[in-house]
Length: 236
Length: 255
Image (cartoon, rainbow over all chains, first blue to last red; front, side):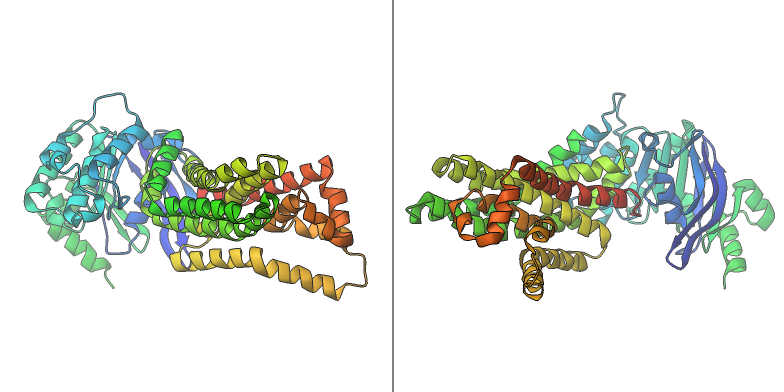
């Protein structure tokens, strides 16, 4: 579904992405893992067209995404730090997004109900706590029932209850055959979610393996322990 | 695209600054027309206020607005919308609301007291001037990521167009006073939209008779239909060029 070929991006002297190539298919739940500053968010933003690569290409459903925008209709994106216009209320933000997407099919309001956002519709974005903003971002990402979900550090600010509800929702969507891309440092959260792992470091993609392969290679049962082993081996 | 313009305009109109700006213009215009017994003289006083205040407010307000909408822009960029239409909607929203503010604040009093060609020219150039400085503000804010630096550069731009440029022209005139400079001056005036607007309006007023030989050359050129077309064309270019360049920059900007 998403094919990335030889993607390079430099921010001045810093190599944020260095010849990254990989393929992501339908029905997979892929975890993007790597130390801070390894290029995970840059890779995600490149797929979304928010960061324009210096070289290389990204194909979405067989079409190159350069100079194209329609493909974003099939992506739900939850940013690491959701930033919304300060003086809009939650209800206005939701209405605006519905208006802009103008989707004719049914909306997926599961998360709005699960996080009881519908009780906060009049609250201004400026007055919300970090966790509530995360909830709004999550609800927006799932609202339009997109084929691809890109979640950047989704569980970082959520309370345990919300985090569990959210994980259930991700699993349900994966079962429906959607592609889910997650970055997270909380490896225990990923354990029962992901089917594949992409490991990045210093802008390079070190490996892209299924969970089973990773378990085989490292001899560890838990994801957290196998990643810790990989990370320690690559740490300088 | 229309949907985004709608959100931008409703957001700006909720902003008190634009309302205060409108009320200020309204108060200034009515006071001037009320104090001066000759409304043609009133128009001249009003012109001086417009040429200082309109560019200043347009450029600073637009720049601050674009910087404060960083979140909004970021949110939209990850949605299925063309980047160009986000940028152009932002421009259209700003230009429309500032032009509306100017039209209410200056246009209505002028049309009450001076509903003739001069009045119309003034209202029209005021609106075009508002739009030009919105376009320049967009250019400055897409070039610099840092808000303080961006607003600083916008103030410098305004200073340049309303003060420094005139000083530079005067310097040129004195240095080369032995040469016939009247015709090159026409070309130089095209480099500054504020000067161009001032000339356009002054030539419609009787005071242009007192501007000496340069005034006569200017009248010879700008007074003709061809000259009028030339100056209008230049003003439109002042809108389009910065806007086109900033839209191109925004298209390839990393967010």
